Image 1 (cartoon, rainbow, N blue to C red):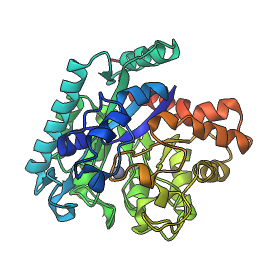
Image 2: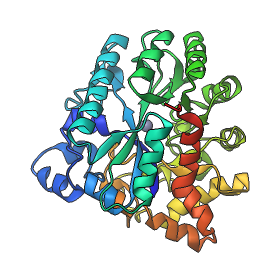
Image 3: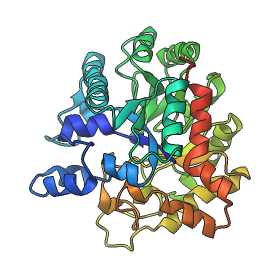
Image 4: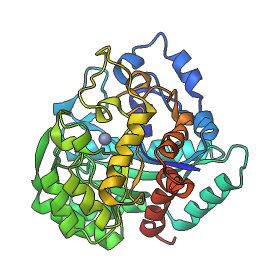
Length: 360
Ligand SMILES: [Zn+2]
């Protein structure tokens, strides 16, 4: 089984009407005459493809951009203030509730250990088409109007929270670097009381190091690559410094590798006509983190597929999420053992979930 720690499923459904019960090929065919691919690329995700690739668990986000970062007229799910953010994120919760109720054979929420182990058992039993497990993850916390409201989101099933996407009222973020605010520290305390998982992706280094200092619970970076491998990528704070990588690992955390070409090969830009990024580059990015740390215990996949890019900006040989397992072949070529490869593709994230999910 493979675990993928980042996919904006609700955002795609609410913004583009994408139906993830369908196969990648079907969605691509349906979107040929629409403008969706020009905004978010050709899809990489679909239930039959998760099954083909034996990708059994996805961290599924609640995400929206603040209006000041609106991508374009098509970007209908933007917010002006915390009330607006809350409404979109509630719509996202509704989406996950609906898709799991109407298609319980295909999608199930994972909000506790029992649900986790049921999903793992189904996938490991080689059932033909098990249901994909969704762990709800909030990307940017503006929807939490006051820190104590995080209790509500926890009740609604959210288990992972990142304070930032761009800057939020809780912390600086991508394109808007800065520290954790006083309200951000309060939110971290509330999250710690609930035993939630903290996601550092999109935080600037300043805030990430403060959070590592302060937060006593489980810490991850669901979708961030090593900055040292792509030093010219702007904004600089989108990826992780070697210092932050070491700190996350020393806290037992896991870092998800984003399968987006500009985060994998320095200087690569979309439509630049450059040689495509390969799976060798993906393995090299993972290997960089493992080499710094001296082990393979802190890297996983956080593909971010359909998160603002599609097929053309993903590494060649990855036609869809069904091909994630090919990354294992490249790691084997670098000398990684079978157990290390399994750790990277699956077990490291399962360890985090087993530590970070509540019993019931
Ligand atoms: Zn993101």
